[in-house]
Image (cartoon, rainbow, N blue to C red; front, side, top):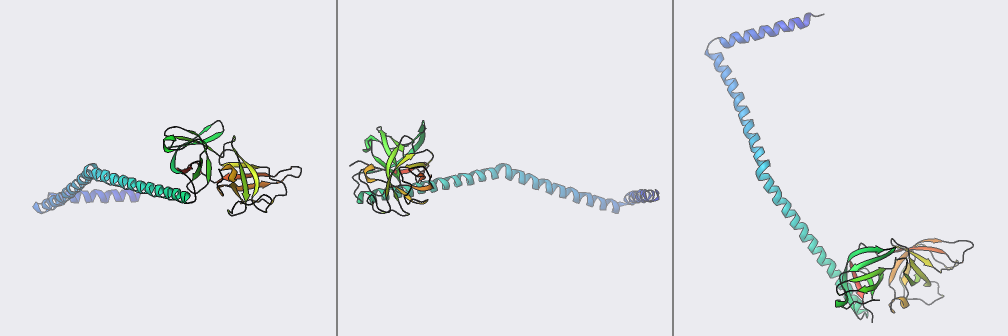
Length: 272
């Protein structure tokens, strides 16, 4: 069973001896071996030069080129951000002009530079203040026309806005159908009067809605004109939950405030 390995060992030893004899005979075998070794050395030299070039490209010029490309990418991103900011400002200005055309006596575009809480109440900090004509009681709306809240404090260069979602805030509202309509009269099929209270985290609780009122999920919550200085159809939110209890006088209704505090651009409507 050990015959085959012994035969292979004998064959390999014989080949080695034959190769030694062949290389020791004359110039031709030596020349052939020199050429073979010389070619191998040349190949290894070429490989080493290629490796040195790659190392140089990666270590020197490539790093500089990569830095240049990264600088260009950052520059383009900054330019895009600048253009986006200009487009956003133009949109806010168009809204301000539209509101002025609708009869607003004073409209001031502003940016929200902070959102914070004091206790459970929620506030925005705006970058416009008394020097711009803003004062306590002024109404704040979003870029899309949603009622945000009202100014409760105005410094020279800032304003503090209490959001409608603050638990200490409440507002007279009208519950409309699936679309905004002119403010209806009490007792009609839509536009039922109610009170909206803040409940934090973009939530509103709607009070004083009778059990027999035809209110459903998806209906809109609109600010009553008497709560906004006579302004009509200022959207506040959308009803998300309606529950009726057999022994309760009023329905339990929750709505979502359609203003997102992460929005930056708002408009301050100055009091007449």
